[in-house]
Length: 244
Length: 202
Ligand SMILES: [Fe+2]
Image (cartoon, rainbow over all chains, first blue to last red; front, side, top):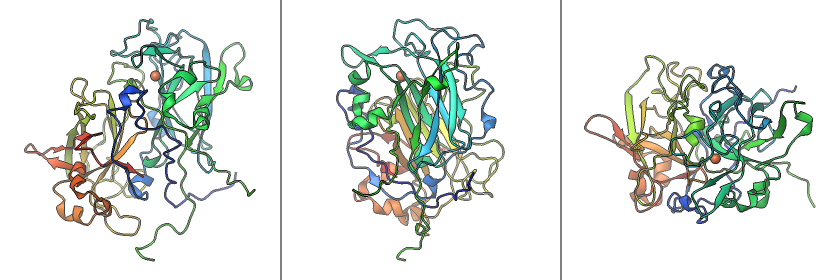
């Protein structure tokens, strides 16, 4: 492995046209939860270039095994492995990144007091897990395939099967929450939440393909989900006294 | 044609949804036994340097209603302006990172932290004491970035590069935590409307 210098520049600006529109009336809750004034832009300072660091000490031995981490007994549902790489916009692996995930059970039901769907709870499924990427940015966890579920928005809206991801990079400005979808799900083009993303290529980047090569025979299928965080510029000409 | 830049696009954000607490603060929402404690619940792991403070507030939607399904995260320097995990001489008993799911009934968040020291702007100027804030919730499609400044730091605030950059100076108070009679700071966030908080693109 070759040693790479840590970039010294600030983070590349977010492409707000690539990200979802904050105000998107088909997703009704966004109407009153979207800012109307322009965002104030400024270059990343130390407060955003730095961020919380989490060692493997925060992890328990079963955190990355959602099939068993709630009671120790096996959850119901098709067993899957989800793996991928956390990388930045320049293709560098982001090592030591904390990835937190949460999801519905195989019937599409969340373990939450505000959940109103009639599908049954699974006594052995909690629905949360976490993992820290290795030095190259790779992560892996196993879970059960979440079910699609209906939600109160339009009269008959259903979420495609998905896993929620929360990712910490090295800087607080990289903080990201997103969702992973599954290849071939017919609900993807119908979903008002996915519809907040205007660019079809951006939507594609959230759909995980099945990977037979990583399947565990007689055990679990595998899905690959790479996550890209904002990149830090590699430049010596960033920090300078005013006017120089 | 020209060469390719070989650059990747950031993964697009999606809303944290109504069940963000299952993944980020499972103990708070009754999923016990998976993690020993919720991440970011304690910012102090021992005796800390500097002034210990409490910040409370709530996140309001465009109708003025407090959100009960938000997740608020903060990141800040220690009392000497050093970042834990990044500056070798940072306060070892202070994490700099806090995460609050808000009260189940009222949505009010609370952080028990320290008043941050001043940190330099990239050009060398001093910034006023501040805390970086990141807010996600159902209906928020891209996490909202803002900052907490302190109403009792008038002198430092007057020379802060970001506060100075605001075209609408009447919006500066939306970034100020206000000292209360009981000594705590109040920082209310308004996502939308006449009191809309200044949000950042950083
Ligand atoms: Fe969901």
